[in-house]
Amino acid sequence: MVSDTVQIDRPVIGIVGSQGAFGRWLQQFFSRRMGLQVIGRDPHGDTALSEEALVEAADVLIFSAPIRITPELIRHYVQVAAGAERGKLWMDLTSIKLAPVEALLESQAEVVGLHPMCAPPKISTLRGRPLVVCPARLDRWQGWLQAFLQASEAQCRTVEPGQHDRIMALVQGLSHASHMLQGAVLTQLAPELGGMAAISELGTIGHALDLTVTRRVLGGNPDIYTDIQFDNPHVLEVLKHLQRQLDGLAEAVGRGDDAARRQVRKHWLVDSARTFGREDLQEGSHAFERLGYLLEDLAEPRYLSVFLPEDRPGSLRALLSAFEDCGVNLDSIHSSRNPEGELHFRLGVSRDCEADRLHAVASAIEKAGIGRVVAGLVSDRTG
Ligand SMILES: NC(=O)c1ccc[n+]([C@@H]2O[C@H](COP(=O)([O-])OP(=O)(O)OC[C@H]3O[C@@H](n4cnc5c(N)ncnc54)[C@H](O)[C@@H]3O)[C@@H](O)[C@H]2O)c1
Ligand SMILES: O=C(O)C(=O)C[C@]1(C(=O)O)C=C[C@@H](O)C=C1
Figure 1: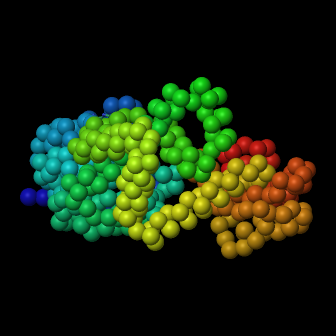
Figure 2 (figure 1 turned 30 degrees about the horizontal axis):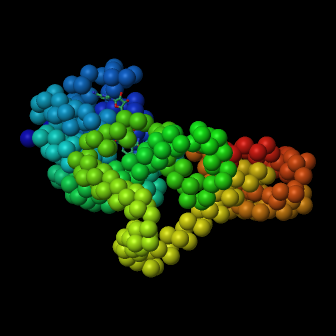
Figure 3 (figure 1 turned 45 degrees about the vertical axis):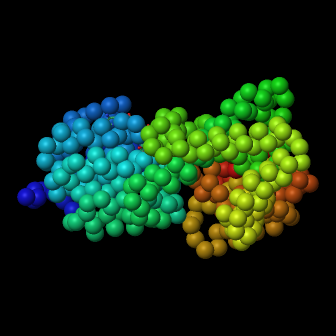
């Protein structure tokens, strides 16, 4: 018998792990975007509600806790709830899906597993990001779930939990491991060559892109990257493949003869290229070049980054007029976000534009109330 107190139209949202990165993002999302009451619990900083009180009060309970403890934590909450979860919706955000979803199914709640394919974004929705959805036991909550997924603005992809984990071993396990290994090799070899700065000065686009991912991984939450390697049961097999390929390549290069060169060319280039096909390779190559131009634009030292407070037609034209009025020629224009997630336009100007002139444009923009100059003038790289 489902309790009459369960609210499906305007549910109270409960977050287990409310003080974590995604827990905090979810609080904002549900309260600001969906106008719902959000409660939570976290041993680090949110213990006002007991586990029992949280389970009792939440119509939708979301587990957003460290990967390695999540299946056991869910089972613990099943014990705590002792049937009070019947008729409610329980879900999780874990980067691994089979074990948490199996644990959720031990409850009597309706169950859906989720996995956003990004860190909590700086914007208020998951706009455009893939979101894996594993519907496991859904009935009365189906409609609300659809409304929530729509409000998230994510690109939802329905996948079986086991299939998710196998794919993630390649999407995450392989990519994270490759970049962790690159980080370790650079740590060992870069110092004798003058350090990372000396190396990156001579960098290719490929090096810059790899280094961007490596720094993201190394600068992120080490628990997430460790847990994905250890707790996704398919990652070890992928690591063994990676090791075999690397050993084979090193062995061939070590042999160094013409036969070894032919082998490397055939096995690691020509044969693998067939996996992608000509069109896909061309598209990848084009994407690489576009990213190269983007990196080049972003590294140019003379630019203004401007936040336009008025989101209305014509505000960009007014901004461009300020450059025209001051006789400053533009080299590039990009809409981008600063590290805090604020949207701005970044306008690169030619290197021969004197600093005084750029200052004049900046003052004109601010004086006319067109926008707020958030970076530029000095050659910081935050824009
Ligand atoms: N951050 C990401 O990039 C990302 C992306 C997609 C999915 N996820 C998933 O989201 C979940 C949370 O990740 P995060 O980045 O917010 O991690 P986090 O480490 O920032 O947050 C986890 C929170 O759980 C809390 N916690 C620990 N033990 C708990 C317990 N017994 N009861 C309640 N809370 C407890 C911690 O104190 C912490 O505040 C993970 O399952 C992760 O796989 C994270
Ligand atoms: O830093 C990012 O934006 C990420 O994409 C984080 C990342 C990842 O690197 O795979 C980390 C764990 C999550 O499961 C999903 C995404």
